[in-house]
Amino acid sequence: MIKSELIQKLAEENPHLFQRDVENIVNTIIDEIGDVLADGGRAELRGFGAFSVKNRPARVGRNPRTGEKVEVEEKYVPQFKAGKEIRERLNK
Image 1 (spheres, rainbow, N blue to C red):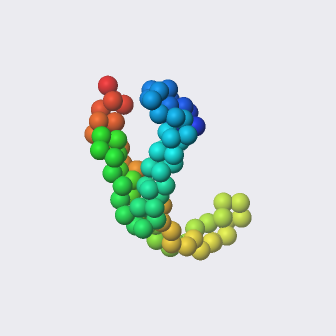
Image 2: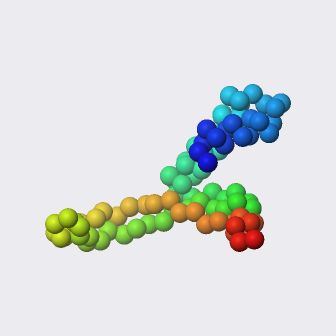
Image 3: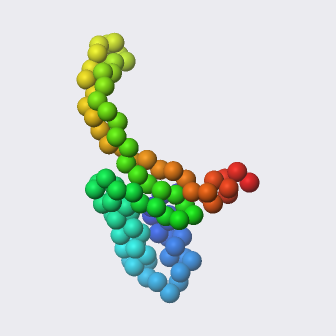
């Protein structure tokens, strides 16, 4: 499911809300999670899962085409851990 499909589904399930309001709500949630992660924090949606940031230290990698060694800089990547309810639904 992509974001536009999520917005459409939520708008259909909540006919008392305008689609533009649902779109604003979804965008605000996604933006807030992104802001928290950018600050190095953790965002948890109970029953769904938790988003956090993981540090990948600098290392020496290899160019697969040439085999030459390449320095890979340190970076931060988002990480998601599914909540208990989602894992149970997936493993029914």
